[in-house]
Amino acid sequence: MAEQRIAAAVTAGGIVDDSQAPSYTVIADQDGNKACVCTTLPPVQER
Image (cartoon, rainbow, N blue to C red; front, side):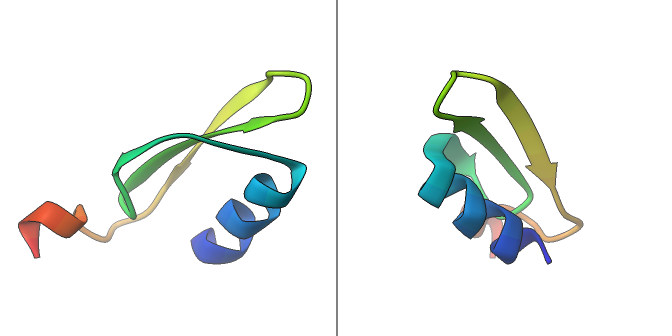
């Protein structure tokens, strides 16, 4: 589910910060509105 939302955000505007993905990703639309997508998965660095 998170992957689908992030993919849709990339299409609409983009990712602002994915340094903690997939557990925490900041996305933005074309107007600059930001939102956070959070999951229970650990960041890639911790895997």
